[in-house]
Length: 67
Image 1 (tube, rainbow, N blue to C red):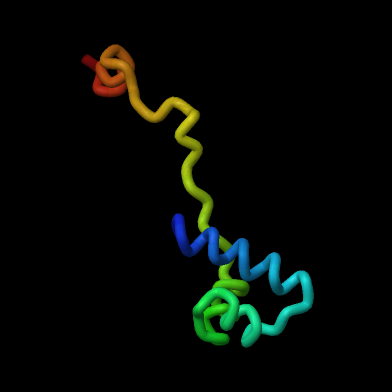
Image 2 (image 1 turned 120 degrees about the horizontal axis):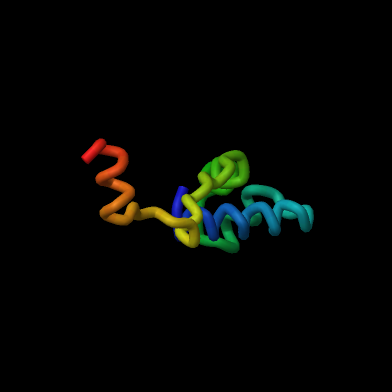
């Protein structure tokens, strides 16, 4: 789940915690009751932390290749 779906998930969960039914949440967000239920059920996938080092330096690649 990414972007819009993740933010919808958060919205649905918050509204659900306030006591709204899935039908009420669906009406507020312009989605079906069933879609609201699905969004609440699914945990958003974790995105990789792009703050960490994701590329190797040339010397690191050479070392891995044994060059």
